[in-house]
Length: 369
Ligand SMILES: C[S@@+](CC[C@H](N)C(=O)[O-])C[C@H]1O[C@@H](n2cnc3c(N)ncnc32)[C@H](O)[C@@H]1O
Image 1 (tube, rainbow, N blue to C red):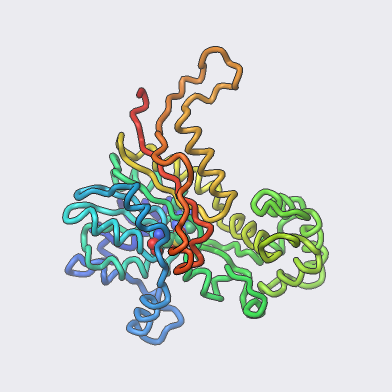
Image 2 (tube, rainbow, N blue to C red; image 1 turned 30 degrees about the vertical axis):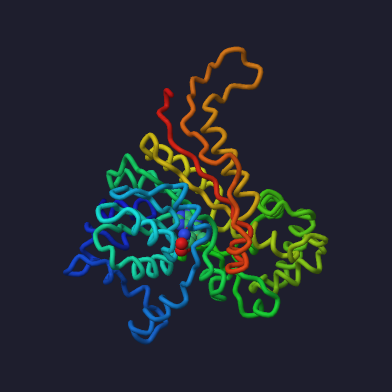
């Protein structure tokens, strides 16, 4: 795949053998950093230290992912959300010495961390900066078919949540300096603050209702429009204060702003559309018997994954009372686990961010099976 092609699909090479601009003489991905990743840092060495310590994302449900995806020596694996590469590293260890992994992420910092962590696997790893919404185009350009396993570990990483400058977090004390950014791919121009400043009231209401399932979505949308007429919502603290004033999202087990921030993040990154496109591309690329694993962290996303998997298991999309199938669609997936797998108490105690994780796994079947 040429860098030009990836640019066309919104991607950018971060590693791999056909990337002369970023690869060192040894062909080793350790050198795959460009100067844009060093912004704001004094020395390359300091930056690398920060990447290695800051990106300590603990892979969630790791044992379960390995047991259910069954990556075998020599396998070809797609990690559609490589992040800090915790899952990717464990998978690469399982598929060695000949197995290969294609890793995607939208976030340049995540890819920098993944590139560093996976350096020892050399040519067996290809990292691409792209949304999994463009997975089909990335796979086509890489001429990758017959994938043995694909993993989507959705959402944000611990690093993204913990970095105040990324704007994903909303703790009331830290919020005063936290700008409302929330872009996973910082090449994208629209931030959460831009969306709050310009979206029509009906669009804001839809976002809070559909992506946050927020009681009081219309009230909050109106409050935002009234507020922005005299002062923009710039920081996380501004928005949290407004959520409290508008009295929405209360009476639940979460902080009232949880659903508001979730909804905004989904809208800023167009997460649900990318998910559908990414899953469709993954199913097309899997070989018969190949497996797909998806970890979701909130019910909206998990429900969407569940419905998508059930539809692919069923095949036929004819209305319920149609006597004979006229759509002609065949099942393409078989569930490997009927219910979502959740983390055990030990994992949640050790890594509280795993508590809402739900893992679903399915296997590709021949279309005419
Ligand atoms: C939960 S983390 C993945 C952690 C990873 N499995 C690990 O072991 O370190 C989710 C990652 O998915 C990335 N991501 C979210 N949406 C994406 C998309 N549409 N395309 C590509 N990457 C995405 C985020 O930038 C983040 O790095």
